[in-house]
Image (cartoon, rainbow, N blue to C red; front, side):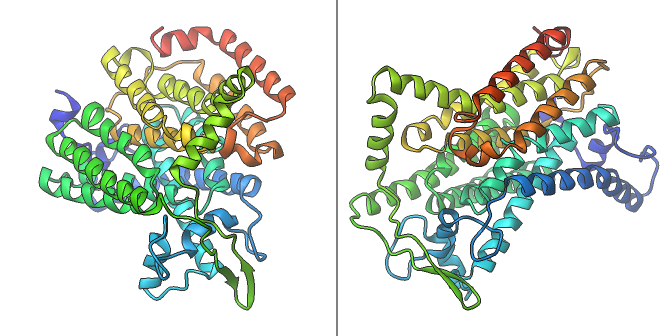
Length: 449
């Protein structure tokens, strides 16, 4: 019987397939099973949160006004509102103002930003926990560290804390878990919730349509494939398109900068930059001139930026596909679904690469979206033992640690590895090639090559 026919797995079903646990919970009382479910995750989440703290120490922004929080660009998304007029990306500040919260208080912005970043990191750790079912304890912890120590995952979360897309991605995935895993809902409820969410998300950040609609499409066509999920995909797209279209129509003709106002910590103030966010026509013109208006040089830079942004997410996708969905336990149909889940967000978010310049951010968010969706879906099949997994994961973790701690990656969200020290990148590529050759049997068998 297929997973869709059997329905969502329960928490107990998941933990029976996990090796990071104590005795079998089969005959325990319900309260004891819940306690075992919590305690089996305790060690895993402790290690994951420790990795989060280490990465934040290396990758987080220095902050403003003596507080280690978002940089001025991300803080602006929380401090502006509709008090003067409708402005692009002003909904977050307007919500705070409506509830009587001072949206110019940098401590409030910092608290909200880090709370959201932590919540997204916890979702990532939970996904890694679910993807580790059936692995040995050492393999499971190595997989967790490889995922969390990467500059394309927790490193990106720390670098861009305060980014509204973190809030929207985390909220979308929590809604996904609620209506498809925890308590499956009917088409009307699901469609209404996702339609409303799409409308709100489009007003908070117009790029959300390119990031979150792929998740809805994957759920509808690849992973869940129910009537409710298909209705949700349609209503999300409709709601988001209405919001984004309205924002474009209202703000496209806006001229002149919008006063940025100020933020403060107590009596200390800091003026925010005047920023109207360029119109989409201006963004498209600037990016096209940079990428395609300089002849062969522009094409070469475009290719380098694309490779630099997608290299780490692609490698991690291969690794997760090999470790969590490898060997003969998963048939070709399962593997095609896994690869489609990784590929669709990258393909459907392609317009963002033409109108924006922070490609590393979009590629990293797309990878995390796919990873968490797969963690919530993963069928109850345990990969067969493979002696090479520990070696591959250990070496990958070493490489991830070197990159995460490198000062040159402070702007990973813009171009990924492009602009990184070429000697280290070159050495890293040779290192990965050598490992690929040394463990060629692992990749052939685990990826079904």
